Image 1 (spheres, one colour):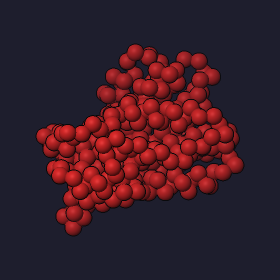
Image 2 (tube, rainbow, N blue to C red):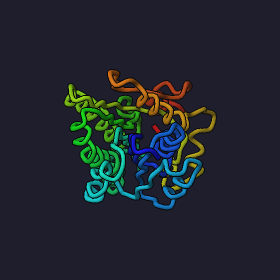
Image 3 (cartoon, rainbow, N blue to C red):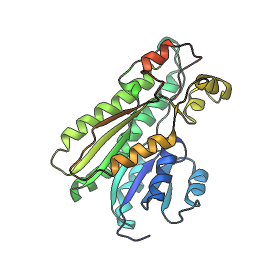
Length: 260
């Protein structure tokens, strides 16, 4: 891998949107720093058809010390980090707030909010110093369209969206771009995590629908990154054709909400 090829950090790279994004970027010739907790999956990803283009980094984004021990120094070991894709995220539990599990809430906040902040804080100073860079945050349409049972998950994604817009304003004039991509219903392993491994419950939701898949979002991320430096994509909402909005899905007969 040539050292003049800028690196791109992708979090949540062991599954779902992050995995698909890492694969697509590597196939396009980028050097990808793949960040996730599961080292075995990252090693398998790195051994795929583009050897040398994916550097596995087994880091839990919730662990601020671990993030700060590795990510800020990436440019010293190789090419500069041109972009950060904050894709790590999850939803745990589903239902009324009054019946919710505080441990589930904390896990969502630690991953969806704190994890994104840790990684952004680690890499943003270098981007500002170089006068170039791009932070792409993966949000959710749940940030804008409420649905029954979404409560804390939706609130964490509202944080992602609002932080993206505020950061965009704050970085005006620095040459650093900020974008937020908000997917709708997508079939990944997301629903299985939300429903605590209940495969039938996750499968039932998608019956009779044609949801997005991880590759749809990966293509959107890459398109966003590929825009010329004078173009900043602030916010993209992307959802299946047969999904009106999250509120509409909540109203239709279905066992539960999934990856929105």
